[in-house]
Length: 76
Image (cartoon, rainbow, N blue to C red; front, side):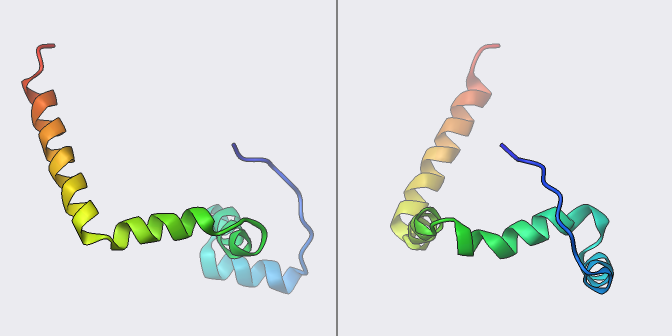
C-alpha cells in the first residue's frame, strides 16, 4: 500500500530532480534512495541470497516450466 505525502524542496533541488528523473519518476526515485535507510534490508538480503543459489534457481526454473506446461494442457 502506498501513502501520499507532501514534501518541501528547494527550487533548485526540485528542478534538478525533475531534469534527472522526470516528473513521473520522482516518487520512485526518492523511495529507492530512502528505503535502505528506513526499512530493514533482511528481505532484500534474503532474495539476493536465493537468487545467488544456482541450484535453487535451476530447480525453480524446472518447476516453472512444468507448471506452465501443465497449464497449457489444462481443459478450459
